[in-house]
Amino acid sequence: MNLNIYFRKSVYLMLALALGTLNSCSEEVNENPLVATNVDASFTITPVAGAMNTYLLTAQPKGVIVSHWDTGDGASPGKMNQVISLPDAGTYTVTHTAYGAGAATGTSSQQIVVAQTDPAKGNLVQGGNFATAADQAKWTSAQLSPSGAAFWSYSANGATIHLPGGGAQEGIYQAIEVVKDREYTIDMTISCPSGLDETWFEVYAGKTAPVLGTEYKENRVMGISTWDGCGKAKFSGRLSGVGCVKNDATKTVSNVVKFSENGTIYLVIRSGSNKTGNEPITIKKVEFRGK
Image: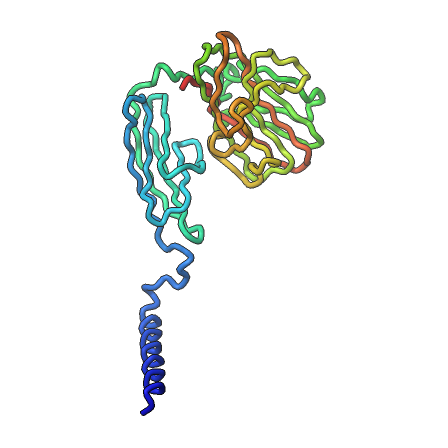
């Protein structure tokens, strides 16, 4: 027999056997190798030395493309080696959602028990949960929408901004005492049940007292802006994780602020929209803490 013919027949036979073997074991084979079938979301928790109530969350890396972390305020995108701070005493459930190839997911949860509140990181915001009339009284309306077209409402679930479009906006604020050159972080839980269109949500920390009826613009710290690429799909989590508006001082996405002198600053939260049909945005657990 011609050796070339013999070789080709041998190759065909081996291919046929291989395909037959694969077909007979199809239940054990990932028929689409671009989609992960099992994503391991396990992670470890390590206290950070010298930093009270601060922890390093380390996800196992195999097959994980993206990590989302949730400490009880909603999941936010993060790093596979994520440092978190839990200033207040309590029991926290940390959930890691790991995303693999083809958007396959896996989840894993662990608890952290924080025995003692960090006295250096107490929350300077008053009424940050908006749950009671006393909480709500700590906030002043900026009166940016005299007709009431845009307005904030309050409940046990938080503060909600209602935006009718047409450029209407409204804001709330409160005064906070700060120490010179100390770094602070600002954050809050924020959610919206659907994507937004031509909408902004911004947080400021300025030294100038707000003037009622005048748009506040001093020292923007963070926020959500559909023009900058966030808020276009439904979201729920910490503003520091889901926001994309750059900090005026650092020119990066950062929730850190500091001030050149002791005294009073004003935490201002305002939001508005050019388009109709946007669903309300809700916030709670507003925080202003020393680092």
